[in-house]
Image (cartoon, rainbow, N blue to C red):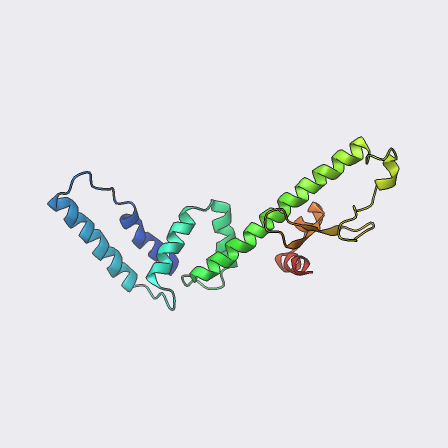
Length: 179
């Protein structure tokens, strides 16, 4: 069974793949008109529910710019086979961008910690800093996480040990991020 989203995206494909005319010809113009009418007719046959045809076009363009892993992850988050609202896609991408930034931050901090442990902590006593999370915003101790300022967006985010993050389900990640 073909899903409405797949049909809608397939309907836009010929229109978006239409080669620009290097020279205006009667047959070229008729071909373009036929493609536009066919696309419109196909979209009218699909039960888009509350999603507009312009949202479907935006979704098609967005999906065309994403890698297959991200598309697969987005598809798994959908609860119905209906064409998703554009806002659903944008919300997913915002969450995904935060996750990517969080993982990058964790990897960066893990690399920095390993470098400091290898080279000492700068005060001549290597053992003093082992096993402790650096002081950030007054947060000390043997914790798996700490708070820090994100370099791009500037709000305080929670930085967590990479192994901890990879083993978390999405809801736990969301709760940790909101803490």
